[in-house]
Length: 595
Image (tube, rainbow, N blue to C red):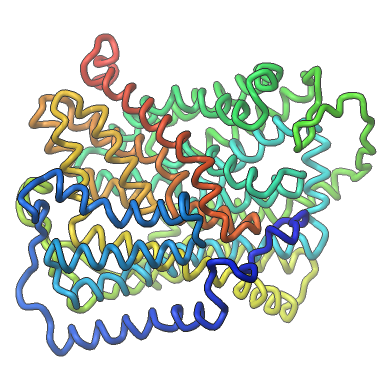
């Protein structure tokens, strides 16, 4: 959706493509609330009596049950990466597979599976799509008013080199937005800015996803850690400290990895001083904040320190070669620099500063709790709430799964972003009618994204409430002494399948604790490893990829993006597993856990 978009990168499906027509998409989208209504009505009048207990090995052979449980994920990712189907087509195929497996193999009652589908689709629309829509809306407003062009000029005035622009925007600025809001917002904003600087859309998508890794564990003012505390009972200060320690090497590694993938090893070495400044600043700040404070301000503080350190450093240091966004050497070319003054630069950044301030304020604990108390509505899902039971060995004792749709319409991050967008629009001189028209245009432009994400979240919820996720997790738990390594991959798998490190922590936090106690390693370490490993799964999570494709105007090319990031995601997750393994068994690393 950037100003440099080529016709081939349009969000609209091309003739002859696998995308459904607007009519068929509308029919499918319209079917979601109809299915929800039918499911809720059936359960109100003929609810499932008692509880339905999950079964984790329906075939009697754990390896076969694991393979069957993995089918929805294999179909979803394979349809995008191998068959190159449109994201919404792949999501529907994955959802159908999940329902078939849940009902026919894992014996989930059909109406229970149907209700779960509707619940997941609703969660996809709110709060996830509710975040994407206003971010894209804000971007469109900045393009309409010319502020985005001015922003591009201000960034190139800091540095002409695309490697350093990538470091500043995708890594540092993206980390700030992840800390304040999360849920896809950093990828959407980073992609938009990178495209305006001349990066190719698919390239911008893949690099933004890769950069959005280390900050994820403390995103949205520390929500993933708070959720992990809720299911494990381990104090948030302890979890924050261990997670920060595990991720410290990766806060240093990822910036180097990012520039290497983008420009090549030689080009990365040419700017190593700037990369080192950024990585060490972020890593050290995150470690100190994680060791001595709670999770809330870890990302925001680390990202702010990194942005300031980079800007100051680049005033005194310049690379010998300057590469443009296509990695072409433009050292000898004289670029006509913008003469915009401080006032123009401030106006260019005003919409994004407004976004940062409002989202930060919106997520501030006391304000957020107050809004929740005044405006949130908890809606128990009839026929699903406390009906599904998780059973040992996933939990210590049979535990009913809650299913409450939290309509926190005022305290939701998306609402804060929408308020910021409207306020920024007014500050940019746009009237209410213009704002309303642009909002409707944005809604129409992301209609395929809304369908895709709601379907993918429905798939994730079916896997969760049916117990397919637990079956996959239990397979990893069979690795014995190697569990610290493979347990880390459980977190990676959880985030990759649900799209959320928070959801992964909720799903597998207690499993990590129990398995750790059985094999004799620290349960606190393994609970933390779930979150640390999960951050590397964020870049291949289907919702994240759809956000990136939407923000770059490459909707329909999700398979290409997935192929670009998949091996990086798996490789980084494996390295996290190695670090956790060392902390579990090898001195002096084991002492770090009790530090």
